[in-house]
Image (cartoon, rainbow, N blue to C red; front, side):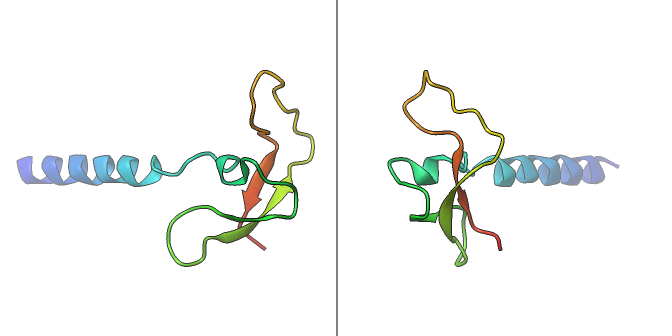
Length: 74
């Protein structure tokens, strides 16, 4: 029973560590324009394109455009 509890704790902790390491998708497009190439995520297939999100309102109090994100999917 104790081994099972240790295993589940390690599994859940590992998932939190793996999922929490990616930065926000708009950081990959910082200083870029729409249509520029960007890299986001880990692994080999990280090439993407900066795209503006529809129905997104950029916060004027920040320097970065939160609506311009790196789109790596089709």
